[in-house]
Length: 148
Length: 148
DNA sequence: CAGTTATCGTGAGTAATTCATAATAAGAAT
DNA sequence: ATTCTTATTATGAATTACTCACGATAACTG
Image 1 (cartoon, helix red, strand yellow):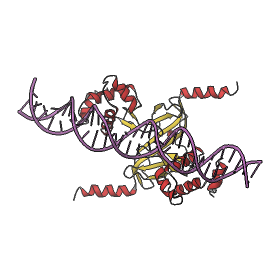
Image 2 (tube, helix red, strand yellow; image 1 turned 90 degrees about the vertical axis):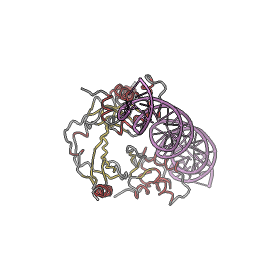
Image 3 (cartoon, each protein chain N blue to C red; image 1 turned 90 degrees about the horizontal axis):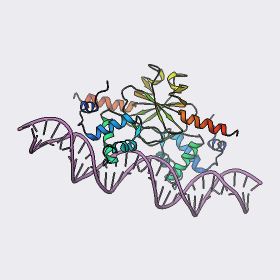
Image 4 (cartoon, rainbow over the protein chains, first blue to last red; image 1 turned 45 degrees about the horizontal axis):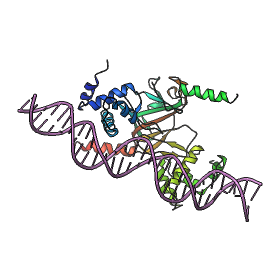
């Protein structure tokens, strides 16, 4: 069972505020949302909240490791609640949609080198780039269109 | 043998300009440089060149696939000349140093899934986060310092 | 060598994010 | 419950990385 948001916030040594609860709720509904999307979602409950406050809250929750921040190339930072399971992401080059990808292999050798050029590797992050189902369909239609 | 820069530019269907040659030269000397670093390097040969022109040149060369653009989280975009060999990067969380990492395994299963959640994956990008040798040394010294 | 057009230079403009500081509210102590 | 302390949020400006529009310049073509 998922712990109550309020409890996990408290467990992290942070004060429980309506803003933080609202942000966590928003991220449940929007699994890979950028700051703006979170802002819009939270505004439905708290109309007056500013974008800057969302930034502050997201930074605090990220710092406390209650949420995770991902920064795909060419797009603003995204946040997700699913943490601690070292999953990766597939991003659509067409529309920017993000999909969680579990690392199917328990310990892929290429992903956990103990050292690389003297580096002490702590984590490995994989980003898959490709086309989501919707964009594949659009693409196929466009290609087929050449013949008509 | 590496082809002459001028030839590869021409081969890509682009005009050969002193600015483009200077940028390619700069990237030979600075394997993972951001736009600013390239600008400073090029200015030694062409004092008047503006940062915006560097942006334009880097964009053109990236578009032509003569250089590759990487965008590590939390840092400006970096450019490198080494392309076409699908290598990855280790980035130091301490100082931001970047190190090329060859994919030791010929075909790591986790890295080339034919599909993931319906996505048609085109490329996989791996970023290793850790500490470079210099920062490991600093870190060790700092930790040791706690006892003194 | 002249013409066409890709490329570069200039300056302004934008998006994402951060910072400083004042106002507010959460949790502890009474 | 009430007050106190201090973490947290609000406000507004500032910064960074980057893009865009358009006139000037210089590559390649014939």
